[in-house]
Amino acid sequence: SQQGEEDPQALSIQEGENATMNCSYKTSINNLQWYRQNSGRGLVHLILIRSNEREKHSGRLRVTLDTSKKSSSLLITASRAADTASYFCATDTTNSKLTFGKGITLSVRP
Amino acid sequence: NAGVMQNPRHLVRRRGQEARLRCSPMKGHSHVYWYRQLPEEGLKFMVYLQKENIIDESGMPKERFSAEFPKEGPSILRIQQVVRGDSAAYFCATRSGREHQETQYFGPGTRLLVL
Picture 1: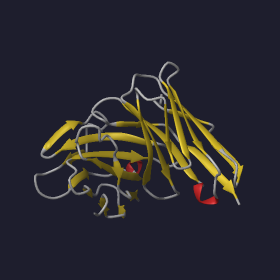
Picture 2 (picture 1 turned 180 degrees about the vertical axis):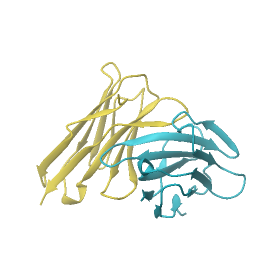
Picture 3 (picture 1 turned 135 degrees about the horizontal axis):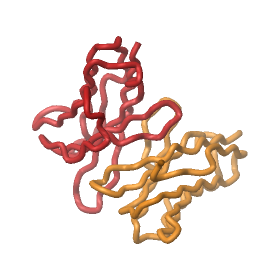
Picture 4 (picture 1 turned 135 degrees about the vertical axis):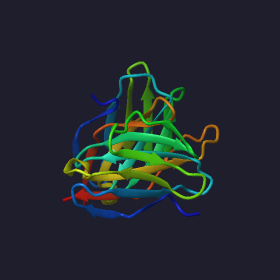
């Protein structure tokens, strides 16, 4: 089974609304990273949070990490149509190799 | 400063042929990771290399697949005698290896189609 599992699998919201995506994992981690992937393209790194951090911000992004619950959330505030993409969480456990979840498909309606 | 480069971007092979995928790291990056993405799936780790060394190949199929990262030139993922199930997007990611710089930067991927 996946180390990182995102939920929901798909999310559809109106432009301007906030989008919250969750990720759960199973084993201890060094850090957790969120990536975005537009259809047919490569991955773009969004934000990294280390195991000793609880919350991080970057522009319209806010990520939290709860190591006791082995979970993370990504919040995108004031969403835009351009935020439409797949979002993946990835955990870094050994040698910095990343273990990805299956991703969340976010659709932002104009 | 160019990002991670991969070529070719698209590759079509017939069953039984060989596929060679290349990855040129960002300047200053000496750590390379290869991942495979099947349709509608997340990325799966295959292999981790540093210059001239394979550090972790736990995600690599035991047969037909090999990877290298020579002292000079790009990292290469080689798939011999391809089968239809090898059709996927292959991404490489690189990082610098400096302390507290864990972020991996991904290339645009090579989409392999096996006919």
